[in-house]
Length: 466
Ligand code: GLC
Image 1 (cartoon, protein in one colour):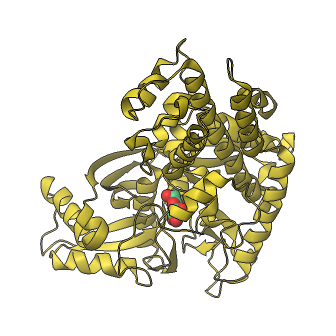
Image 2 (cartoon, rainbow, N blue to C red):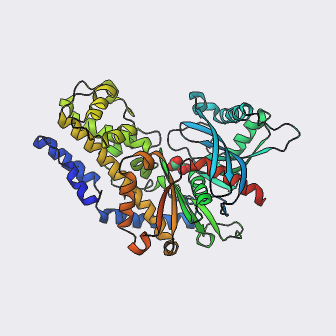
């Protein structure tokens, strides 16, 4: 979908003049012209430089201590823990030596208690269950198992296997962890269970995604998550990282975890904030933080749409002014409903009718209501995809020299994988900002489950290079 054709998407068949005027306003707010994106990208680049120069900046540009690349011919089985916002996975990853992997994993849902108090004991118990169920628990005579720990939150790394939690993001907010070394917290919990498991690497999910993409394709330079949250990691020349005071690695390069979800959070000056975004931000658990992430990622888009829907309903422009208890509750619209709505091409928009009347319990909906609902889903998704391109373009132009030959970008996350049109709009938008002869060298690949796989690879590389 080219952005010019999307301008048509706000014309609602059968709408009253008032309904159409409201949709036109939304169109103006959500369909961002290329010039606007160019201005945001320029600022994004400036913020990257600022983060490379000093600590404590809005883009943290965190050194990951990963200074190697896998060759793709490594073999063996390695373990990882992948902590996301709602789930935890423990994995055994087997590298086949030809860039491919097989995984055996077990998924655990974080309990309320884990989320509010006992997170690290919970993780240790999951590791114990995984090992015991498979008879893999090392006995006193065996060497400890090395495990990679994917921790998808901003951590100021102090070594490959230590790092201080800077703040919680996305849905998690466990007290007593900010300011502490998360590996220490986990290692202590493992010790309490008497498990001979050593946390060999601490890895952000974007770093894991990049490393897993690199095992499969050595031209991989950037790893990105467009999922519940959003962020990216890339290989940078250490000589470009003025704030780096450590030793110069032999490879001369290091993966940086950008923590790009925080972009614009200090002054709220560049992103296209609408009243619907401001309302979400104010009521979120982290107001004035993760501004970019709140416009792009799965945790938030349903809520942006809900705010728009209520704004229309309150003016009697939608559902004849009616709402429901469910629709009135924050977070009641999951981003997956927007995915389903955006691709509903049935003649009577029956999928959307189901969402409105059954899932959200709004008594009835007209065809115009359903068309408006679909348009909101498309608008919110379109803005997310186009803004996502900003981060990608800023990162690519930072390393423009790499684009003279083929490069791969490994991407994972539900928005990228499942939101209709997201991938296409993202690539299309990037193509507007990168010269054609360079753009043709870029390959966007899905690095499915890369975060956990990559952590196992980093654990392997870390243990081999010690
Ligand atoms: C949030 C976290 C970041 C993570 C991203 C994607 O932005 O702060 O560390 O990489 O979500 O999961």
